[in-house]
Amino acid sequence: MVMVIIGIITAIGIYIFYGEFIKNTGEKGREMNEQERAVLISMFGRLPEMQCSKNGNDEDYCIDTIKAVGARNVIRSNKAYYSNILGYRNVKIEAIYPQKNNVICDKDNYPGCGTFAVYDNAKPNAQDKQIVSVLVSLYYPHENKYRVGRFIIEEFR
Image (cartoon, helix red, strand yellow):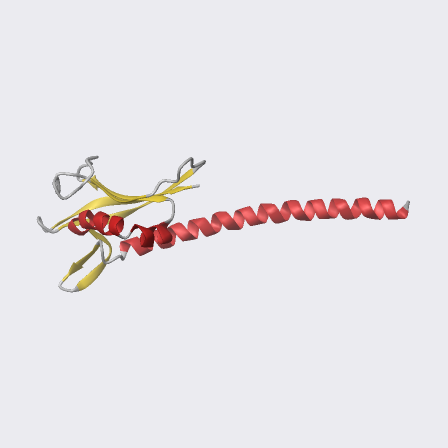
C-alpha cells in the first residue's frame, strides 16, 4: 500500500514538472524568435546590397532605394544562400512618408513606386504568421532626398 501511494505521488510530481518544463520551453522559444527577428532587422539594415553610403561612409538603418530595387534580383539569383539565412519569411520595405504608394518597385517603374519586395519565401500551408516592422530612412539618390519607410519582416510557421 505504501508503494502505491509513493508511486502516485511520484507520478503527480513528474506530471507537474513536465507541464512546467513544456511551458518554460515554449516561452524560451518565443523569446528566441523575437531575438532572431531583431537580429534579422539589424542585419538587413546593414547589408551592402541595400545600405546607404555617402562618400564611402555607411549609414545605419538607411536603405538606398536604388540598391533595394537591385537587391531583389541579387537575392533571387542567390536564393539558396539567402533562404538558408532567412528561411520562410517575406521581407519588404514600404515608403510611408510623405506619401504611401503600394506599387511594387522594379527597375521599370522606379521611382514612381513605394513598396520594395526584397525577399519572398512564404511557407506553403503556414499555420501562423508573425509580423515585425521598424521605421527606416529611405534615401532616393536621384533626388538627394530622404523619406520615411517601414521595414517589414513576415515570418511563417
